[in-house]
Length: 144
Length: 146
Picture 1 (cartoon, each protein chain N blue to C red):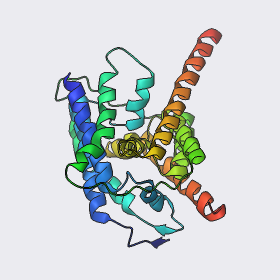
Picture 2 (cartoon, each protein chain N blue to C red):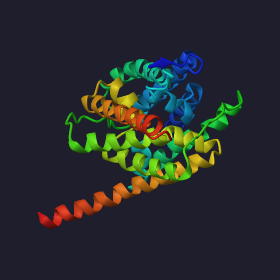
Picture 3 (tube, chains in turn green, red):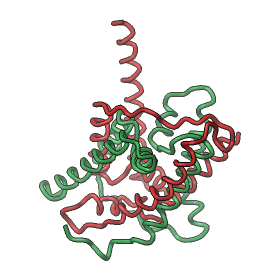
Picture 4 (spheres, rainbow over the protein chains, first blue to last red):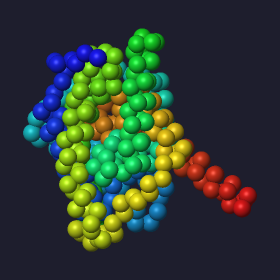
């Protein structure tokens, strides 16, 4: 393991992380719920009366965040190296996996670990390990 | 109505955090997941920052019986670790490692007009829809066999 000191951005990572923590904390204190993005968005596909608008509002907030950011600064560049077929496979796996596993990086990773939930600690360890293994296989064994 | 405003606000702040932290950029996320390459530890600090703030909020939230706007507290209580949790998280991690997108950054990048994010989010919603369909079918099957 060699740390890429040029890519490492500790201060913006901590500051952005704190904002994410504030958002998750506000969500728990105000709404009494877990700010798990896969759970909130996935619930839109299981429509129930009175349960749609707040979920949609949360998603609109996320999608609209770049617009709010642009009021203060230019967007940082995005780099998506995955091909279109790879994006489809990735999306399907993320969609099915987060619903079966009851959460993603936000619900398990941020909220769950903040609450010291044993389920979330296990889930986070598993998806991190699977992520590390997948990148290792794709980049270093298959050379994609 | 209040729930809609607070949800919008939380989504907005969450999305801003993803942009500021660099996590809306899949290349940066993959830089963290590539332990054997030139490793970018930033994602670990994003988690550390989020969890240290979140831990305080959840400690307070956990003691409340209603939320600050009077909504019902719906924080999960299950402690049971089952196969669904592990297999689901494994599939999610694989998908995350393929493209560097998880659900939040996918939606934020979509808001930046990134076409590849649109493809990812569409496939993700299809995957979530497939889950709902399988769940409904499974429930019907369970009911019939019972």
